[in-house]
Amino acid sequence: MTLQDDAIRPERGQRPDARQDPRLDWWRDAKFGLFIHWGLYAIPAGTWKGEPVAGLGEWIMYRARIPVREYEQLAAQFNPVQFDAAQWVALAKAAGQKYLVITSKHHDGFCLFQSKVTGYNMADGTPFRRDVLKELAAECRKQGLKLGFYYSQTQDWHHPDGDGNDWDYDEAKKDFAGYIERYVKPQVTELLTNYGPICLIWFDTPKGITADQSESLAELVHKLQPDCLVSGRVGNTLGDYASAGDNRIPGQAVTMDWETPATINDTWGFKSYDHNWKSIADLVRKLVDIVSKGGNYLLNVGPTAEGIIPQPSVERLLGMGRWLEVNGEAVYGTRPGPVQGLAWCRSTAKPGAVYLHILDWPQGGELLVPGVKGVKGAYLLGDASRAPLPVRETDDGTIIHGPAAAPDEMDTVVVLSV
Ligand code: JFZ
Image (cartoon, rainbow, N blue to C red; front, side, top):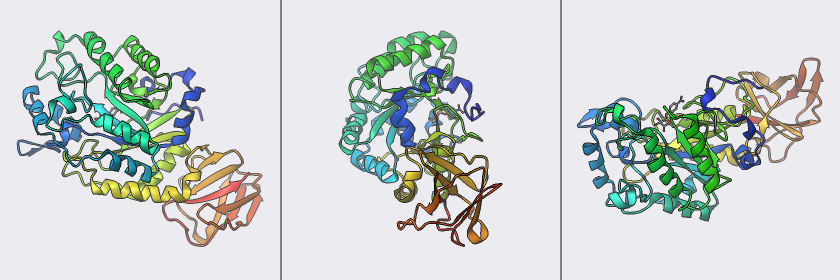
């Protein structure tokens, strides 16, 4: 179980000395978080000057090569009067998510928070005139949800010295080091000074960043808030935990602490015509697959320009929450189980218990679980009476006699007392 999988590239890996770091204990138990991508890109929502723009919604400025002077005009229109931090936090909790990570500044450079470093922000540069992160921080404290910030530390298509905008600016004339020192670090300081305890900073796309720059950012975070975690995308294998590629899940269990960021449709930022929503069953199974391999699932919503989380996202998150209401014991606080590498089953574990996640229930209900011995008893986690299931040990493993039909088509959890 010590495989490095191509879903987690080394430079986004976890620094080795973090593997026993107790600061991650809450994160290792949390398993499931809400990602929120929200910004000016929700206004065009995938269409620019009447034409659909391919790719991710939050990349529209880049994909359509929109000049800064045109794109920044969107700020004057951004007035999401239906934004309600209490609703967003309540949804995350109803979904069974234990932390919330929102884009404080994405690659387009627009800030959802009031910043002294730039007026290109929600509080000073839009008719909305409110600090979204301030309101979310208050609600997360009130409702007991951990809050983290996504921050794009290299790509900034608005700033002349940020990486990525080669249609307005001459890449050869950029002072990227100066951008990190005089823009990124002051903003990271604002984020970790003005919003109370922050659980993690989710840096992203460590393009062209040096190991010294990655290290100085991680050091700054830990100096300002020692318990704040740094994502693997700070770059140069200096993160407190590893970051898998978007929507990527390793093929087998991975010893590091790691997280898969993922979308419910195919975009992070809102696109009005992306209706390719994954089913609740698919999302539950992805959560279980990830957790069974030792990872966390950071599942994204892209709110509209009005501040509304799309209803299909809401329905799916609530469906996952209903499943977790019954089966959360087999997810939260678990570690990878002993049964790995089977298509029909995943496993998680806690001291004294193995949780078999049966994804493809066998005809007739007889489960042969290879490699598991010493089972003292078994029952269905969804059965409140915990009626014991007959168990028989064989040379090949343990046979458990369950009901003929699958009690839960999405994922039936069988608890083994070991
Ligand atoms: C990045 C962003 O560019 C994107 O807009 C979104 O915020 C996503 C969560 O992160 O996209 C990436 C970054 C890294 C990989 C893939 C997409 N990767 O390493 O495979």
